Length: 461
Image (cartoon, rainbow, N blue to C red; front, side, top):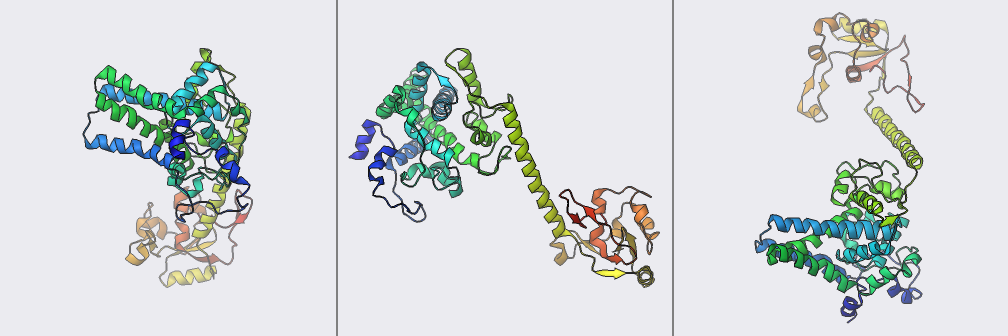
């Protein structure tokens, strides 16, 4: 009966108030609910909300319901209106982050249209989102990205939230808001009107395609808005599609143009998590952020004002700091990789040893204090060692065999380093593959890496 009652009182998903009465009786330490362990409760209202649209979409496909251009236009119109006007502008940037100030008219519009997304009331949505920002990537985060794509995408929505384990966030600024309170009380009615009835009536009446309007403008629209909104919690926290972390890498949020394209600009998530109260997600003019442009237009017409912007110097300093950290990490990784690939020169040769070996038929030359054997077969790749696919440098040298043969048994350092030809970095990295030892009379030079550490990693290259 409680779930039936929720449909009419519009507390669609459990709010913190529902749990506070039992908070005192709960143990301080409890195991985090997980699907794999079965220690959770289903949120059946959430399950209905995300599965019903999907099932209707499948049914529409099965029945081969026509998807005409006018119906497509109406579907896109209501998806943009619901997703951008209602969710990204209203629920997210206005009510959750107070990124700008809106008049009563705009608040009512955002509240009513946002309800049609069927993602819960403003108060519930904003509270969870503030918790997410406060406790990102921890067990107190409602959408904890560390728990995998499916959990952060929609798993959290079908698992009943345990507010005794989740973090807490201040939502006192939302309690006395008439718009938010009215929407919470009558959420189901408002959602049905703006999310189902209004799209059906407008699309059906103007096109005459009532069945197509029902399946595509109503249910496909709701399904798409769900998925695109959920992408912000899942896809925007993953290292895919060229996603980057230009401002911080301490948590999972990333900037992604692909994600921004399908979320009305919310894909610049790394920026957003560092500066959540900026009305922009893509702060640069050229960055695709439809919500940013929409809010700016509304400000021009006087529907909102006090658009919060983080000073450019703060943003640029943050990016520069992260850039240093990223390059230092990359430098260290490259140093470790170069050290791993370094070929040690264990054997020591004198010049007499080299000449003796040459007389015995070996093709030895000296470069930068290292003794190289030009006759050593060089494996093309790791697997080639077993397959027998090798490269012979005497045959493969771009300058020809004659030039190499002229330096066999001699020190070719000067010739290699510009006396004959200024060899490329790639050419230098062939040398360790032929390295058999070092010349005793000459100590091989060491080089100082950018990190300040003496290393012989690049010797002879």
